[in-house]
Length: 208
Image 1 (tube, rainbow, N blue to C red):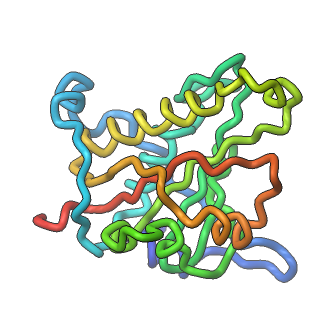
Image 2: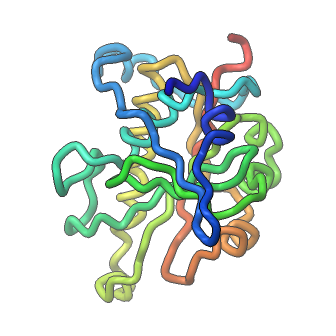
């Protein structure tokens, strides 16, 4: 069954009693977009978003580019010490979802629209139909050492992947550090071992 946009797909998601709503994502298309060099040429930050929904296929692609599996046990993003610390959350009108990269699915974790919490004091960011949160799991004892800031670099690599995918596919995005971390941590039920590093509002440019 082909879904034309995120809202239709979410409405059709399976929700079992006592279980989180899980939405299967289409298999990412790896032969779309432009060349890497052209995407690098076009890469830029955009702070003006259309409220038009993006397709589920597009969302699947950007999530895979950010943090998906391109080999059986390895991701599209590099991580320090190969710790695979990064988790991605997608905040939309219908709620917040954790990206399950292995299953290529979205697992609902919150019914609320958290885009305003992501935008914080910059309202333009809340207009984007999707905001991705880049979260790192620092539960491994290696991250208790004061010198170890590897997850900051891990998050930066993921951010770069998002930028390149968006540039290659005509999407607007911007990397942001600002967000209401306390509100998001509470809504997403994140333990102290999960660090909210960055966020990326994603959508069509307002002019298109």
